[in-house]
View 1 (tube, rainbow, N blue to C red):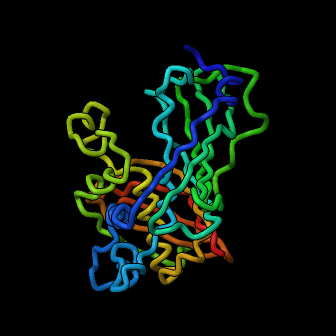
View 2: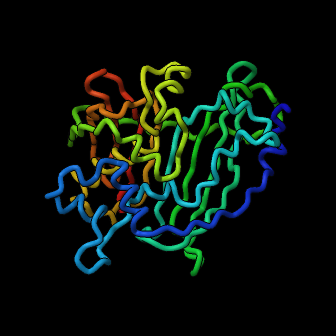
Length: 291
């Protein structure tokens, strides 16, 4: 089945309800490397519930894994050549603080489809609104941009205009820099938050896909970068973390030392992340919006 732009843009998704506990919130943060310094009070607030049992905070990027609809692009009704799909960008917008436990609902819709031409692929944008299941309050919006490398050339029927332009990086030296040595088992921990793709765990699968070893989840990389901003710019005041947008440029490996460069301009922190040992930029044209 080939891609039908009108049908894809009109595709309906079931509302996903997701109940989660403090344990899942702690596991998510551990999958980003938080808690590596057990004496750091800033990190502990995301992995330890405190003496009162009520002090745990949710990392803002946990929105990425809440009420996730799964890899729906491989379902036959989409017409997408899912084997050639590439995750290009991810964005979250925080509307209210995420709870450390509770029930949420996720409503997904297609919000953009842009044809790059035959042999060039197409861009697909999907948006998921996450609400509190009990009150209906909007907590976060998650926007994902994917490159459909095998589905360009469908012509009319897509979205007018162009996909969002990349965030422009400032010139000059960064205002902040933080090197984080990631543990070799980071992907094995992060996958327990819901992304069980064997590409991140099985060496044979990684080799077949053209990688030397299992790679780190892009969403884990995004969370690591968010941690860098929380630590160095916000002193772990996550109430000021209003949103984040990243562009994935190369795979990161568990065990990489990740160098996070940050430029603070008004209420925007621009970001670039490099795998130090390999000299590879793995995240670029990224930004965190501050409240």
